[in-house]
Image (tube, rainbow over all chains, first blue to last red; front, side, top):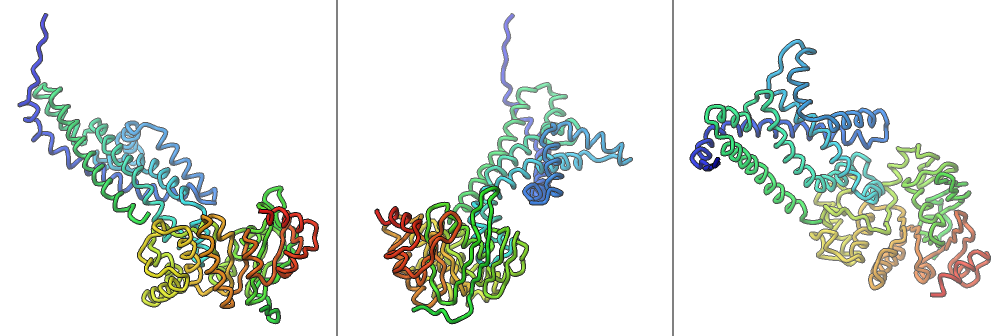
Length: 223
Length: 253
């Protein structure tokens, strides 16, 4: 039996208009979630290095729980599980954003911790010796330097979170993969469509990489 | 040269510090009067850096008492208010410079005057330019620390500390991280400062410099003040066996 397969270019390109509506959803979930995750990351990352154990312990617990469980389970828990507690449904978009937020927040906490701890002790000592308060030392000396060092790992996390949103097709949110699945259901052109889906993810993540490289280059002036 | 009339600006009484089981400072008594230049010498690990770091609270101590310009420091770092005051009046220059790499030379110098003293930017900038001129690095204000040589960086660090108009300057091995050819320019700036009457406590291994600028030299041995005398006495006629041993080792080179 002879198997011949023709890659159907027309089907591949033809799918693009059907996939594009997924992009705003993918971007909204990723960047919405990451923005919240960044705030969570700063708060828990700083709690994690606090001298007070009552701040440190909850931060450790949060980080371990959300870094140590799969994001797919997290989103299923939020979308299907939480409504039982809350007594009302949560819409898929909210659940997706929340999952990215708590998941990336855990990783970003560690990025923040690593960034702040990487600043030499002498920077803080010099600041304090000049009469700056501990808060001022952090705000004007430690944080700006730490933030620069955090840009590459934050970029990493951004790219990971963008790809993670593809899992949310399972809760029916209309992001890229979901749009692809819907289209394939009527055309049966899985190879072509998933290839296009993959290329669209690549376009998003690559753009982000380029943007970050620019940011890093500008940020590094004066180092 | 020596002005021993006035009230001491630093008074340490029975200062003791431990790092875990290590007794780093043992019953230190020390007084420094305004205008005096005190040089502290001793082997690595003898506690000399730790001693001056206690004065501005970068190290806590377990026992004893320090009064700096009327502000009292108590054991275990429980003197936050006094510490804040002391730090605005006591400048420090570190072995590793510790300039802020993300700020220009000018911003390194103006940061504390702007944020702590609340100066106007124009005033702070003007004073920064004057200080840079004074330490001999005009026209470098827009550069970043990494664009300067080690000697220049240390002079910026000196200017940064002086911008707070301190009443006392602490120097923690200010030339130990420098290439030999740059030591001179930093010592020159310090010499100039001493001439202008700044009160200085200097930890250094530069014995020639110590002999030249010090009003008094203190030799620390294993956390204790072993000997304390004018430089001629310490270097030419040390009384303590341990001082003799130390000087024999360092002056051989």
